[in-house]
Image (tube, rainbow, N blue to C red; front, side, top):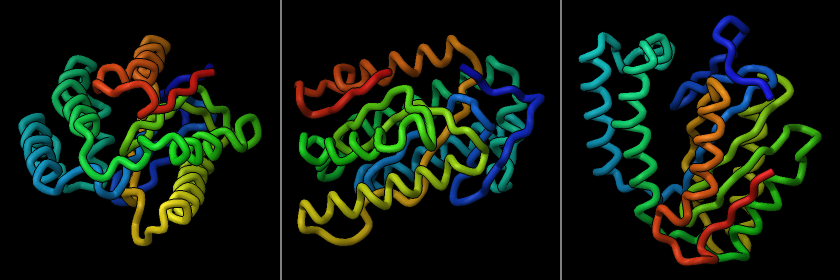
Length: 213
């Protein structure tokens, strides 16, 4: 299993969020339904995050602000993730929106899609389908395939889910969050987070779907 190597080549793609990919390295990816985060919560979270970045010498308006963030000492990176990444996940777990992924037959569509090309286009290491979002750990054989595959997963599952529900419009939030895993200890923490996410969110059995290799 390979983890992020700062000395090796990294592909950084800028969309609404910057995306880092490195050939063969484990990546933690999260995407969410379009109704999963009220605008007021997003705006407040983003304002507080931007103040923290400015206080630590990073201009959040620059496209490459995450590059500067990754260059901070480990203790400041840990502080950032404790303050902002953890809070973001807590808000997702609060269950905003219609939470249609809590329906087992809908979650199964996502489950089957994530495993469809496992061992061919990517190696899936684990995932959880929560009521309004998805977390996964995977590796990709080349730097370019991560975003392409994420777009494919989201396009296919949105189409199938909306056909099942008889709905239209945007289903998934356009962009996703991804993080290259730095070392084994972090990988084990994220794997444990996936396994325990439904329980920590207070969900009753059957309202989330966990798969671990």
